[in-house]
Length: 571
Image (cartoon, rainbow, N blue to C red):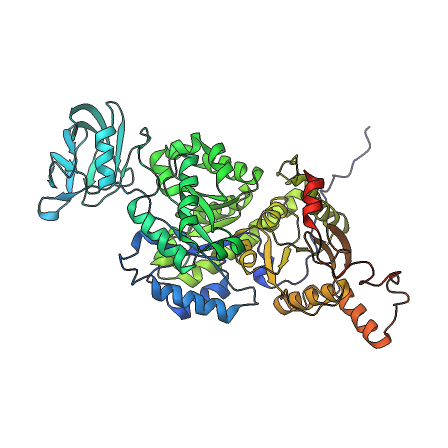
């Protein structure tokens, strides 16, 4: 007889986390589109405190004189001034319209019904201004170009793909004959999509160029989203345009706004590697992408794009219809909850609300719901990672001059894992470095400490990162004073949640030589305690730390570091 065996019980791993404020518990960021339901000063403050990290300004709806944008921008600046130094200071993403392909006018301004199998004409609005059930016209200059370049056999999707036409032959330069493949109602100003056609148009239209000029002159945007990107040259064109409109002093100090390429055409997926090299981040724009590509491919495209962005150390936002039903209802559907959670499992940096926050009845409740879904999804992902020892460090090792500085971030993440640290405190002056440590996906929050207001705003889109701004002109005296000031600044935004917890501190391009390119582990608050003892005793600390053998001045600790030498070593 075989001896009875006791069933194996699977060990449940639990991550011991301090009682962080809700916004620090959540690693995935939230982007919210502003509109009539959310652009008042009161609602901006509510959304920021509920959990919005980035506000999206949709320039598709900007009036020619920007009279509807300027008041919102002023309110955002007022809100940022009031919330400065807190965790509730969202950055701004300006979303450009891009080329728009829409149907033209119809007789009596009434929708027409197209039936499957019918033969109709598609003509440019320049040839015929008003259409009917037998002739559809184009209503924008960009759509005119589509008609002139479409070939027989290519599809034309109308009204977000609800109606599908197939080009059967060209009748003239301005006129096509089409067969109705999928019938339905078509109204005025409805969208036109051409999946098989690489539109011979730049991503920047005349309106976009005007909007970019306004955005740069106002200095309002931390990020600029470029719509309908098809090739890497589209990104280069936007960089060159922004460079023309930003003053040289500001450009030298802060650089360009970060570019987010909206991936919504098959051609962008075909050219994604080249686009990724030029852009600072991408948006998985599932609305137009779902029309241009078959809907069945959308989930796999989402995973592909998120994986590629993470491997390239670029930010990635997942967007469109994430909690669509909350535009009208106080609760989401089960499928929507799963959609948001799966974007978190895929590794997205941020999830985005569109109509839900712009025109919905429950903008504040929608943000709160999205935040709660993210927190639960992240907790499950951490448990899964620890239980099955899955490696989430998906950013590949980089050769060349970057390997030296990235080793600092990698070491900090490894140290945090071994010591089960409750936070990584990272002093840096580089967005790329913040992005890199975010992509390593440590299990604890990352607190980015910086002198730069620009970096402070930019990390709002990065997974797991919360920024703390400190004064570059502060009287820190030495490295211990500097660390003590960092602890005090962090306590202001996190409360006592980190008190006496294990934390990993790392620094790159730190003004103190003894901290530059270092990783150290300590109990949070130890630097402050040391400073207090030093102040009272004015001597070394017995039993707490080893006395320094040389003074900070003698060791050159207060002198600016020669970073040029380091760059030569890295090269």
